[in-house]
Length: 375
Image (tube, rainbow, N blue to C red; front, side):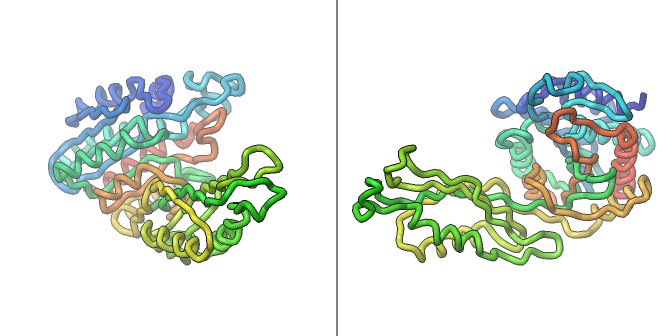
């Protein structure tokens, strides 16, 4: 059994359902300290974070990821215990196999091999790990990033081990992510008897034209890396449950997934401008899930795509699709952030798995990328 596979199985066996770490990071510290890493555990709000660094020189290459996993879902629907790593039909099954304990194991072993071959390598290597990526992400990577920023610790390159591949290992890497911003819109009316509409003000009727205009609005054209910004309603609620009552308000939940072609402030201003055209009172509560980030083609993407090509023969596509990730926090303190990991077809699903044939090549890609950046 390869070292990467063995470590992956060790980590899967630790049932680190978010925000629990269950000893994953402690095990990684046992492997990193003998390599010369200075390891710092940062705890916050029941979350365990790790910052481990080898060396003091620039450039600093960071491997980032999360040790927490999503809940298993119904155990009786799994074909094997999600926390007992199981090999069958050429695949490794277990919660976290794809998202993202294989990536973490591959990063660790890649660094072990790199340091063994180049003990006096230029620059520095670090790991930034959290047990709060699958949850609210308020006590995880963002806390470590704030700490690093406060002490002026400069990051140059960061690879986040998110499962980005689609059909096969190495076909897609993420060089950015869209921002996410939600709004809770309350349109106010006057409740009344449905038989006497002249004595009430129906907020559903009042708000419908404005909602239609928001849905039809073209927010931007996107750019080379991003699709146009999307505005979507996710929930509409009004009424008392009775069929003969005009409601006093309607509550609309909506979300922007937006590119670097738009800004938080600009999108909010345009929403208010549309709503203000209509004759009703309203309130909006905004929640910013994350701002977009983008790493244009450059040294990090070249180093990674070259490594992928050498290992798999594939020409990786750059993509910014998908949801948010901790890359949004790291990008605030690191100029080049890219996500790369195994195929994502089974993530968060029953019987999550990774094909065994991808495990060591993933490790090799991470090691080759290090070589391309530091040697």
